[in-house]
Length: 299
Image (cartoon, rainbow, N blue to C red; front, side, top):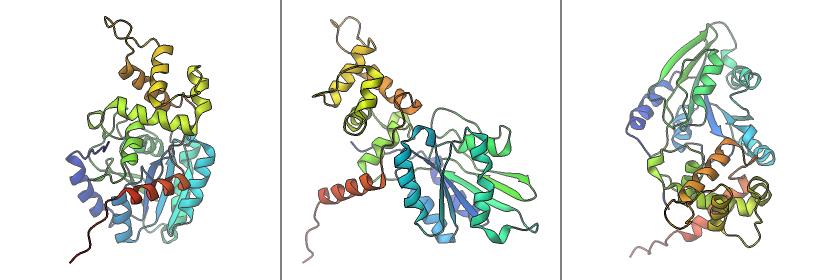
């Protein structure tokens, strides 16, 4: 299953972001801590590399992610040149208050009163950029919603004579190469619901949870997971939550059960779950490379 979602406004958003980056000092990239690499837009890397801008990577929603996985991702990103990574929750004022000082360390030449430190907030849809903006400014300046791509235009906010922030719309990229990345992004609500079938995404998520977090499944839904496959997990959720299609002789409503599983994951009700680690991503990339068709030798 290949999931792709690239609304038209994202093309103009990319062009505007490229222009603004010319005057920004630091890129503040907001990631989903549960899938940090999958939620990192390669176009952002290309744009900031072209301008040679440092990057502060915020692993947001860290309170929903597996802490051991987050620790591994922080080490992974911190090993990259011109990058500093930190795990936060944009809903915690204390976490947000640290950001300007962390960004300042990446742009020491702005540690004076001549020009303000100019931060460019970037990231994919629904990772918490608007929540971050509102917390930084300490008032509502960006719309916050449960659906991706709420913000569609860029804005500049002068917080003080020492700090200016540029808020950008959430941007995906035209083609998601890793099919599992698309599933992770859909499971985490970073793409529009019209781009995927909920039952397919929930089936993938159920299989992943069986493999990586079986105890959390058992604790949440109270069924025995022995000998279960992904479909059986959805059936178990349907039975436990009374998801029955009326008038069909007790047929289970797997579509409704899929919605319950996805909501429980997204809200953190299932527990602290990360959908990828650096080592797991490396293995997936190797598998994808092995599955790639071999190009015939040119004559």
